[in-house]
Image 1 (tube, rainbow, N blue to C red):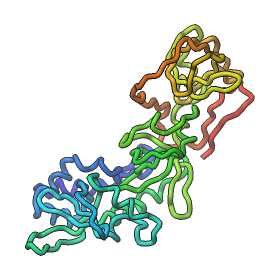
Image 2 (cartoon, rainbow, N blue to C red; image 1 turned 90 degrees about the vertical axis):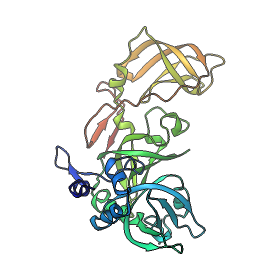
Image 3 (cartoon, rainbow, N blue to C red; image 1 turned 90 degrees about the horizontal axis):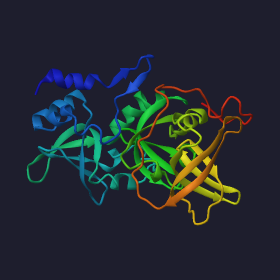
Image 4 (cartoon, rainbow, N blue to C red; image 1 turned 135 degrees about the vertical axis):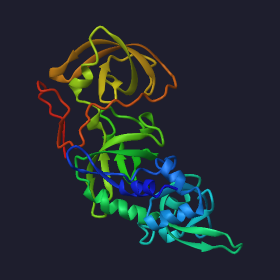
Length: 329
C-alpha cells in the first residue's frame, strides 16, 4: 500500500471553505465505506496495522451484536470487535440507550483501531472504538457549529414528530416536523427517505451539545416560490388539509394555496388545480380543484434556493405583506 496515499487520507480531516470556516470530513455513517482509501485499509492485516498507527478513521458493516451488546464488524481480511462501552458517546452515562448499538447491525459504522488481539482459534482480530471517532467529531466539528450554519446531514430515522439526522460519525440531531417546510405535512416521509442526504440549518444546541435543526429556510421565500407559477395555469398539487372555509393544496414545500370546497376531496390526495389569482399583498393564492385522485409518486427532488453556508435572518413573507414571517438564528 502507498503510505503517501494513506497519510493524505488522514491529513484531510479538516478543510476550509471560501470563508475560512472549518468544515467537516466526519461524514455521516455510510458515506466512507465505498471510498478507495477505506477499502485499501481493509485489504490486509498489514494495512489495518498501518491504519492503527496512523489513527485512521475507517468504516465497515456490523455483523452482529452479542448478548453483551458488543459489536462484531466485518473487516474483510479479519473481523473487529467494538466493546459495548466503545460503541457510542453517551453509552457509559446512559444518555444513549443500547438500542443505538443493536440498530447498527447490518449497517456501516465508523471506528478507529485501538489494538489487536488473538481469539481462541488463534485468529488475529482488531479492537475498535466508534466512540473515539464520535469524540473527535464532537471536539473538532460539532462543538464549532453555531446557529445559522448550513450543513449537510443524512436522514437516519423518521418519527411522527421529526427526523433524526446523522451529521457525522453517527452523531444525531433532530429536525422537528414543523421545521421541515412551511407547508404542513403529516409525516416526514412525504419529504424525505431514509439514507437521503439533505441540507439543514443549525437552530440550537442544548447543554449536552445536542443539536436541533431547521430546513424550511432553505426552500425559498413566498415570492420565490410563487414566482414559479402564473394565474391561468393548471398545475399539480397535493391536498394537505380540509377546513370549513376551504381546502389547502400544496404547490411546493414552501407554498400552498386555498381552493374552494369540492366534494369527495381527501387530505393526502394528489390534485390538478387551476390558479385563479396570486396576491402577494395578502400572501394568498386562490385555486380551483380540477380533479383529485390517489397516487403513489416518489418524493420530488428537493430544490434549495441558497448556496450560503450561513444564514442569520430569513424573511418568508413578501415586502408588501403586513404579516411578517421570519426566522432569526
